[in-house]
Image 1: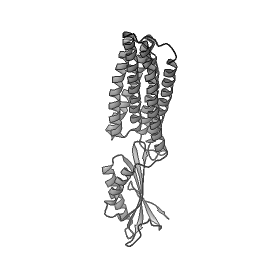
Image 2: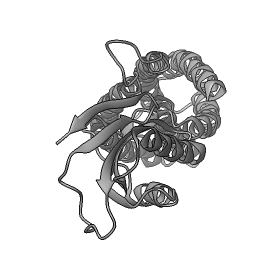
Image 3: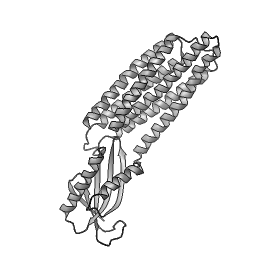
Image 4: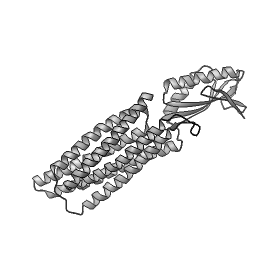
Length: 321
């Protein structure tokens, strides 16, 4: 897990440096050769620099261990970073869409091969970065790096639109069809819509995690099967799990033999936790409450007093009514 965190941080640094370089290239070439789509793409990339820096900072914070003020760790820092990236993507989409729409009502400047080459370089560069970052992000379950990868994907769309727009503009010059130059702003509008959808999806996922949304039903069912595989577990009274940034926190209530000693109950806790962690390395916290179960008891949660034992193996914490 530590190696994956280091790889995620390294990938975030690569993304940040790449965005700085691409921003400089696009804006300079766009200004020199008067390419509206390339200038817009460069401004979009300038926003990506801020987004990459926010993602990198949030990832570094999330890697800190739990402390007195944050006993569950700092995992949600990455979710906040992803929210920042989503906001910047939203603003970039509105910027590109607006300027592309305005360009439709003005004469289009002459297209240049250099601008086309700059757009092609950006397209290839960003596609490679997307593949690289999304693989590491998914492997490490890093929300910040996945958000950065989605940002790269938005740039792939934008650079692709620039290639098409500038390419059609050049073709129009060669065959004396100046109307083809308007493919540039039209492509920009299409890209703006795609990026808006991408930003909305990212924002929705970030909000879900911040609002403590439960994990998917399939994942929950898999956890339930693991718990039921422990022979001493007679009944599952409640099972809940939520994402906390790059890891998952589980809250579990199970029924065990009411005649068990505290030590025996403690051993059951350790078995359950070991079984869950061995198959789900992205689970960081398992909080388990033991309820007394007796032969012939109904399949509904017990209303009697229940022993609450922390899944970390620290022993008895409290008695609940």
